[in-house]
Amino acid sequence: MLPNVSPKLFSLSAVIVGYILIDDMTANEQNAIGNWLMLVAQVLSTNAFYRAVMQERGLEPVGSTETGKNNSDTFSGYNGQSAGNVNTNSNSNDNEQTLAMLEKMVRAMQTEIKNIKNNL
Image 1 (cartoon, rainbow, N blue to C red):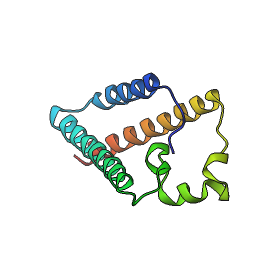
Image 2 (cartoon, rainbow, N blue to C red; image 1 turned 60 degrees about the vertical axis):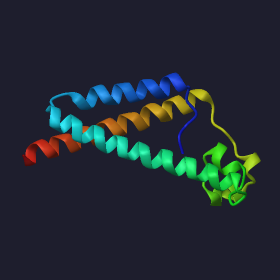
Image 3 (cartoon, one colour; image 1 turned 90 degrees about the vertical axis):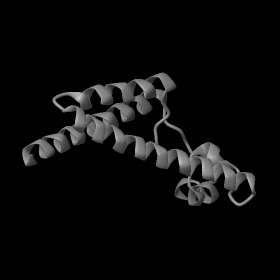
Image 4 (cartoon, helix red, strand yellow; image 1 turned 90 degrees about the horizontal axis):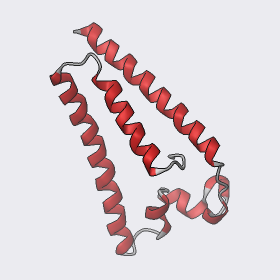
């Protein structure tokens, strides 16, 4: 589950990750990584849109698309709570979680890039 962050911070994180990924990469490597990321984005977009279609047809619970929860979470919430009773974290905690997640992603991508370079 994504933490609650502002749209500007969310977009900025994508820009930062993009700039980090282009360091020391050839144009073909950048193209390969970019196409892979676009494929991931297309899978997510297609799934979200199809869930909206299923919701429109009455085959999926209404809250599942807007809240970002999968079907099991929609019916039972987290830890058996109803979906309306789920506690939310403070914004500062969410921002800390976002930064920690982004740092982990950057480290993992840098490690993978080093592994790819070493294998060339």
